[in-house]
Length: 106
Image (cartoon, rainbow, N blue to C red; front, side):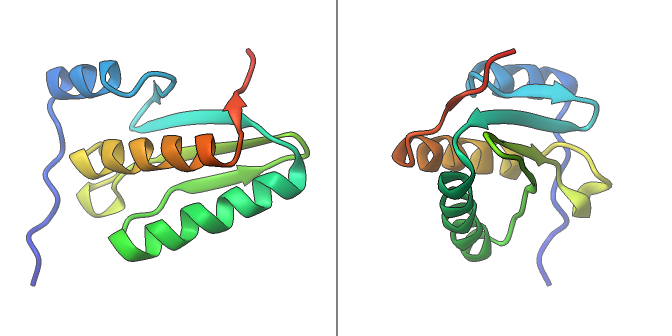
């Protein structure tokens, strides 16, 4: 049986946020919204889902006509932030760039 994920301390969270520009903390989640048209967003989500399946960690995803929003937390750590969340955020950034998504305005 795998060990339970270890939640990050507040200092570790602040440090990790500095290393993942564009992501913001919203309570016990990190979030980021990308601007991309609907069908491009669908393709990006499928790409993210394939990676998530392989690493065993998943984001909550909200698809709109011209944006995709990701929210990440570790459910197995009591809905707290862990290193896995920031690893997934960096992977999502790479996938978003490959799909031509841009940081959403606002």
